[in-house]
Image (cartoon, helix red, strand yellow):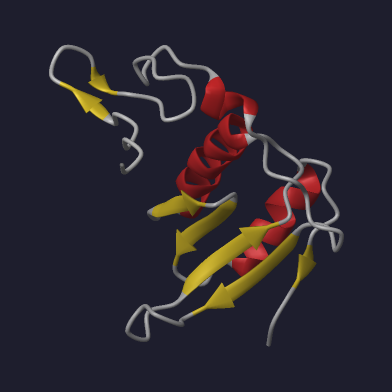
Length: 117
């Protein structure tokens, strides 16, 4: 007999948390999961891989939880005047804004380093 898959959606409650089987909106399971900072510190780089040649600025190694990273990403996107996203604890901002972001992160107290070429 196959084990049952966990419920991920209910028409009564919407999305269901896979960890605690409660509605996802009030669930705090995901908020508890913090992204572990990398041993190399905060890195600011540029990537084009998998984006059809379009460049994005990537910020990794931030010692913040998921909510902190999301708030910081919003502020940095506003500062750069461009869009972006957060994926797996890494902030991606559209365009090449490495110098501006290095300056902004140093103002906020992080010793960020430029990575890549």
